[in-house]
Image 1 (cartoon, rainbow, N blue to C red):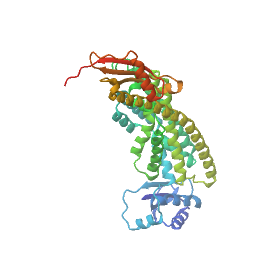
Image 2 (image 1 turned 90 degrees about the vertical axis):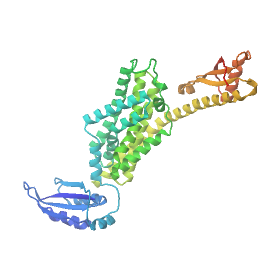
Image 3 (image 1 turned 180 degrees about the horizontal axis):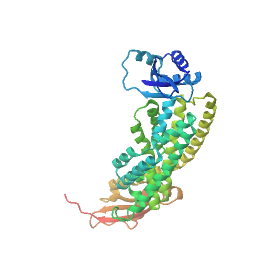
Length: 428
C-alpha cells in the first residue's frame, strides 16, 4: 500500500476531493496551519497500482504544480477496505513518479559513485590476479553500476532528459574509471614481489574467461537488464540484481585494464568488447521493457517525443550490439577452433597409447601453442608431445614425422610437432 498526501493550495480543496471521489479512493482531510499557502492536507491510502491514475487525474484537473504531493510506502495497513482497493486497482508495478524517484536515488552523488567504483574495481582486480572467483563476486556487492544503467533508460521513457543524460554520463565515465583503475593497479604490481616472476595474466583462468567470451555471454547481460527492470518496477531485490549487473561490467573492464598494464592488445580488445556489449545490452533491455511496461511521460504531448527518443536509441543500440557481436562471434569461433584442435590432439594421443603398433610407448600432450589470433592469421599450431618408453627400446628414425602425421590426420591441420622421449621404469 501507499499513502499519498496532497498539500492542497488555498482554493483547490474541492478540486482534490472531487478527483479522489471520481477515482474511487478513500481520503481524509486535515486542517493545515502554515504560512498561508496551503489550506489542508488530504491523505489518500491506495494500492501501488492506483498511485499513477490518481496523480494523473490530479494533474488533469488542474492542481497547482507548485503544491506538494508526497507518496510514501506503508509498512502495514490494517483494514478490510484495503482488499477492496487491491481488487479494484490490480497490478504490481509502481507508479511513474515512484519509478522516476527511485531511479534518481539509485544513481548516487558523483563523489560517492566514483569512490565505490574505484574500491570495487580494486577488489575485482585483486580477485582476477589471485584467480579468486569469491573475491570478484565480493567486489560486485560494492559496485554502484545498477543505478546509472537503469536511470538512463527511465529518463528516456518518462522524458526526463536530465536523468537520462546523467545516467549515460555516469556509465561511460564509470567504465573508463574502472579500466584506468585496473590498469594503474596492474602497472604498480607488475614486477613486484606480490606477483611471481614472469607472471602472465593470460595464463590466469579468471582473466582468460573474460578474454575468450562466447556469444552465450550475452545471456548474462540480457538477463541482468531484465532483472534490473523487474526489481525497479516491482520494488524488490535491487541489491542482488545490482550484483548481477556489476558482474557483467566490472570484471571485464578490470581485465581490459590489466591488458593495458601488461601490454596485451588482444586482452584489451576482447575484454573491452565484452564490457561494451554487456553495457549496451543492459541498456537496450531496460529501455524496451520499461516502455512495454506502460511507462510514459505524464504530459501527453510529450509521448511522441519520448517515443522518438526511444526508437532512435534502440536502433543505435541494436546496430552497435550487432557490430560488436561480430567480434564476439569471431572470438567464439576462434576459441572453438583452438579447443577443438587441442581436444583432437589429446584424443589421438590416447588412441596412439593403446595402439599395438607403438608397443609399450605412452603418449602425453605436454603443450599446445595455438592462440585465438593464430586462427585468423594462419599461425601454425605448435605441439610438444612427451613419449614414455621402456629403457632400451628404440624408436623408428622418422618417429617424430609418424607422430606428426597421425596428429595432422586427426586434427585436419598442419602442425609443428616436437617429440620428447623419456626412458621410464615403473615399479609394481
